[in-house]
Image (cartoon, rainbow, N blue to C red):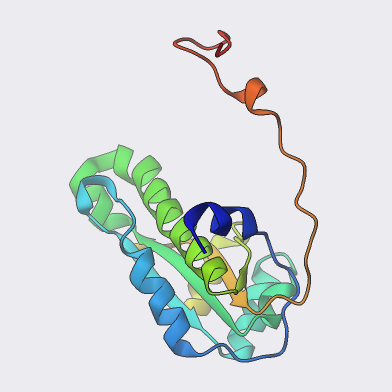
Length: 178
């Protein structure tokens, strides 16, 4: 499967089969996650691999009862070392770069999982302090995303996308690309 097919195949999955995913696939996914770009190559991302059902249940509750989180065989918590990026880039690193960097790593997670025929969904709606407590995160480590991973038990219809012509401009905002 080439990158174009992988991008087209990726969808947000909220129903998972009760089939264990081999940990070697999760580790392979993370090997590619850390190849993502990061500001100044700081690589402030941190990943927590979760398969404990009690922890997944608590995370689902902390994510405003998004129960599909606990149904996935694994959840990867994508976190950022706020202190590390702040030391490199100050306020801008903490307010912008750490979110960008973790987003790039998360995108790699989603795409590699799709290439391995695994379903994922990015979850960013959660109580940060509760997730930090559940995962035992030190003060400087901030949770950014929860990504459930497993074999999809659904094939959702892709939501309609806006037209490219309505989103792309030429040289200045508002000037249409010819």
